[in-house]
Image (cartoon, rainbow, N blue to C red; front, side):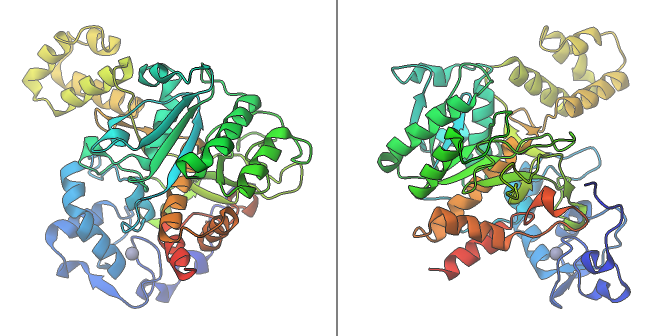
Length: 455
Ligand SMILES: [Zn+2]
């Protein structure tokens, strides 16, 4: 069940004549269309080199990579956070090479989660939150949407990872469906969600699907008990939603390192598409891809789960505004950009935000700098508005966002057809067990192309 240490030469293209066919950046067949780096704008060349594998001697890249970086250059240089080694924190659409023609327009995704927040990436320039429902409150509990509560974090992140428009980064850290509309269903008072909560959420979705034209429901939560779908009410409800025309997207969970690594309801239900985790090392280079420690089947019913995998680590997600975390990230961001002689006064004027920084006031500049970098890394801060998150809770919304692109490209597709397209276009990760990854890494570009071909 562990990844093999070496990949076969046919899969990586490391045999002698492959240097002429395989692009060193994306590791895909260039079909003979190579662009010499020397012929590119110097800045584009530098950008490609910074995001290429460290050992690669780059002379040429495929036409696709050249075009991709050329287009992304201005935005990456202006808006992407730069890491210590000079590489950039890339966005999800860029890393998965999503087709920018499709943004989820006209498609509604419902999110079931512990709580939500009307983040500006969802509400500006127009509010795309079609409905909010708090199932813990008989009256619908709209006021709970605006409370920066601990339970609000998770759903805010899942909804924005899929459909955020990156408004706090000039659009850079956006999701793959930044124009999709959303319906947010709060299931619990705390972060703890039960199978009954999820079941209740799905019942609400089923009853309200027509009013909001809900085509996709994202569930980044699951119970702990393995149960056969034949007698499990939650799994039965997933089947009912699929039959009613709603694609159910489920995270498989993060227990791949445990001996049992079970896939439990709702992810174990046959008709849903369950999503495991890819670790792409925040890189566009496909040879750097590996597995995340996500759960995997077969399920108690003998089904292969997950069906596909998507990024589940190094995923940029928003920081919940008006929280101690937001204050801390803002301070670290300010210090990181400040001049040496400003550090002490900035820390002094922000007492109580970060105890480690307060305690470091008598230290020398270089030592404070070290502490700032350490804290940025430890707190996974990207900018004052975004941070890295991990877990299959974030792979599922990425797949939901691609499903929205697919339905935008071809709205007549049924949930099982959308699932089939995601599976048929996925790319197997070489060197990893099929049980862990299913049909492999989603390929958003090929998925929308196939959806269009079926029109
Ligand atoms: Zn390439």
